[in-house]
Amino acid sequence: MVRLSAGDARARSSGQSGKNKMPLDFQTISALVFLFLLSVYVYLHRKELQTHGFFPLLYFCMYKTKFGLNFMDKFAKKFNKALKFLGYFGVIIGFLGMIFLSFTLIQNLYNLFITPEAAPGVGLVLPFKAKGVVFVPFFYWILSIFVLALVHEFAHGIIARVHNMKVKSSGFAFLGILVPIIPAAFVEPDEKVLRKRPHKQQLSVFAAGPFANIILSFVVLGMIFFVLSPIVNSMVEYNGVEITGFIEGDYPAKKAGIEAGEIVKAIDGMKVSTLDEFSGILLDKSPGTRIRLKTDKGDYSIILAKNPEKEDSSYLGVYVQQDSQVKNSFKERYGNFIPAVITWIVGLFYWLWLLNLGIGLFNLVPIGPLDGGRMLQLALHNAFNKKKADKIWHYISMIFLIIVIANIGFAFIK
Image (cartoon, rainbow, N blue to C red; front, side, top):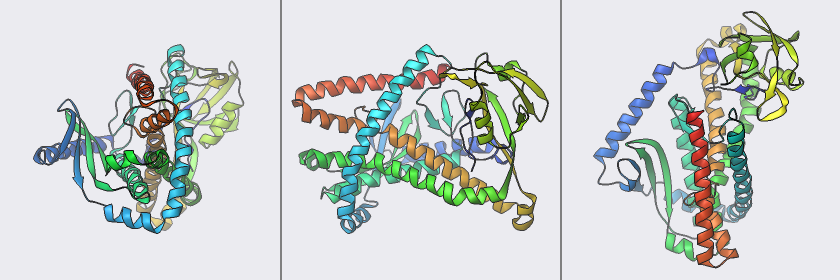
């Protein structure tokens, strides 16, 4: 398996090796066509959509259906006891995730102010390459968002039905800024019934979506490690680590004259074939150490810098990805199509893992309408009278909204 962390360096990948990427133009055109068709759909069905926000500047529109409601009923009845237990366990995981994520966001914002080179903790996930955006190739993006949203919302609906709460509708939705940008899904429990239920039942409904995404992320990760990794390892040979770009700042790799596209073959005479080997060698080096780095284009003498986020670690200041190619023996046996399909599937599973984990956790941030915000509000109602609790909740929501916006903003200005 290609591991996407490289010690002092930062790995960057589209889920495929550099030699197997789908052309950027094709990805961009596909994304633009999708947005165009989505815009046409919203316009043609505008009378059937429920729109909230400030249309057409910033809005959220919903198309209500009965899709999946029978499935939620049957699934909730068949596995009622197990799902009820999972729902309550999800509450514990939800609050732990909220605490972890809140601390991480605060720490990350602090690092951004004192260390300009630090990476923002939050970014927009879009199928376009742009500064400040986490780029996901379009087909990976749309499939991952569809699976993520479906699992998240169905989990809310199923746990609501476990506690015999009515689910009024389901459907799909769009977040728009002038044009609809991000597709989503929703499940609509009866809010009047939900609010009258014991807090532990309400909490289990709110926590169900993020918890389901987190569970799915670990399931996908297990499939990557135990199913896909052995296949990939039998299919490819690793030829080194490619330098794909440089982190902004006065860092040693760029100063040494290394260029993007060069492939690291050895460090201090030790062969480098994989990202793990690259990371392991650099982790053993201290800042200020001089290393001899060999690439496919030449040899470089480099003095390692301090990691801006961890001063006792060494730093090259590069983005890297695994360089690999399909073994000739594999191509002779299976041709070129099968390796290409396997490579694409590995990329899809990588993004399914990463986006389910990242967006699942992000939904636990204690901001008003997010699942984490609603969980926090209920917890505060247990600790204070309703008026005081809502006032505290409002201030906490605003603080974390500012923290998230600041993190996103730093990504655009760094």
